[in-house]
Image (cartoon, rainbow, N blue to C red; front, side, top):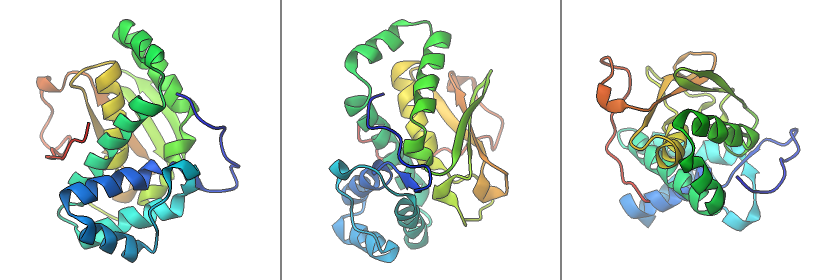
Length: 219
């Protein structure tokens, strides 16, 4: 991945795609009037993508506002926004030559290379939270103090945006058709948010392992 250097760690900021890609999904799926209602409730203006990193509190406020205004549709919309964010990263942040190289590698090695790139740029999606690769069998990521679900409470994982970002990247570069499941979530009472990459989802999963969502997929 390419991009500017990491921001001052004392300033809690996150990449603008956490808002801009969601705005695109809302415009397409719900219409500008609803998008304006979400932004108004959040008290946030749509950021200029060229302006760089944005306050993570703004992104959290927009995600929280969407959940408040459309609780039944929020998960699907946030997942769509995560897929769109992954597509944006593939178009603009990972050079074509690097993508071709990763795709030519054996899957196990490609997963490690891509995981390393994600780790190096984790400040763009984790903000003030922490990120690490927690295991390889299955490939597992952990985000501590995830700012996008801070203050939320639920009986199931809520980080559909993050899971979808990871899923788009790994499905395109390593394991076509893979799925990413959040198996622990700060909002559901866990100490951190944990994501597992399933390279072969057709094998099936135990009941309740993941939540199947039908989404708008803006590739």
